[in-house]
Length: 188
Image (cartoon, rainbow, N blue to C red; front, side, top):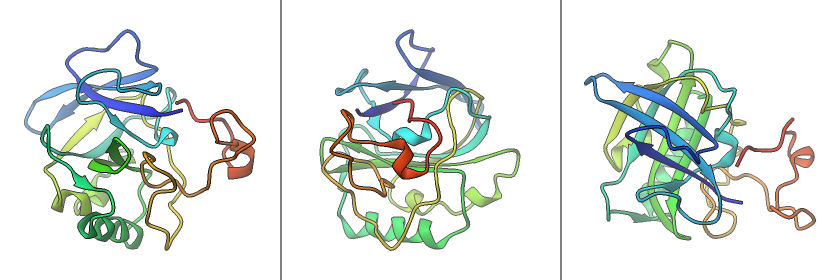
């Protein structure tokens, strides 16, 4: 199952999770998440489903999004370099690349819970596309396990990084939470 994320003007009724956000420039909106096999709204991007948690705390987010119609191949050297820099940098609470299709990198989300946003000061993905520092309310972002290294490539087409396990062939969605040390199944 895929998980999708999009910036919206208002909270969509069909979203599985959503939270309002504000930015330093006083602009705001809603970040919303859906599950499903196809993009629910124009501009939606695939995100690692472990990022989404309806019980998640408020967080500071570095939101990196490509301009509409702009993308890089996921395996482009600049994307690989940014992923390696994330692995080498200070730990964060949530991290995922954004993909569309099976090989198009279109951005990333890096987040920390609480009030200390200093760990987001140097987001390696911001060197690829424009980053916005936003404050996202409760009800959307959980915590993802620290990505394993040195693996920096996707497992299977259309999976956002960090997906650090091969799919489980014995479950319908390919993910077996007990085998990954995750307490609850991902929302999406």
